[in-house]
Image (cartoon, rainbow, N blue to C red; front, side, top):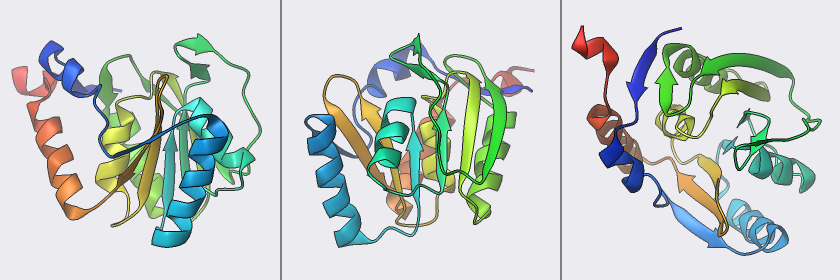
Length: 177
């Protein structure tokens, strides 16, 4: 495992802003709105990042192709929940980084037609960027916005370009060598 990207102090504040559509409300309200969005837009693939969001999608029968979790919610350990995933992978991804191991697992999982769960030893937050980058065009990548609701990111060509720019602005320990 090697670190490909590290979060810079400058970028930390920017990434607290939603990358897509913020759906505010309680768990039930956000899930009801998401169900409507899925019916309207029929995304080819849905990816969830985060334990609470993944659990709520599962509970509401919103099928994800890929769920990325770390068995924590708000940095506190949570009890693992059962899912309908056909495959489970484990990767290491330290806090505030993106590793080559995590990138490969997400990329390969999104090429597979199976329902896959990736369990991260470390932190999954920044892996949202990689999920958007590799998700099929017009897919939904969904993550939680603490104390507000959920964020639904549509993986368009323009959004992928934006994400590439963010990744290019991150610190890359490989470049320093």
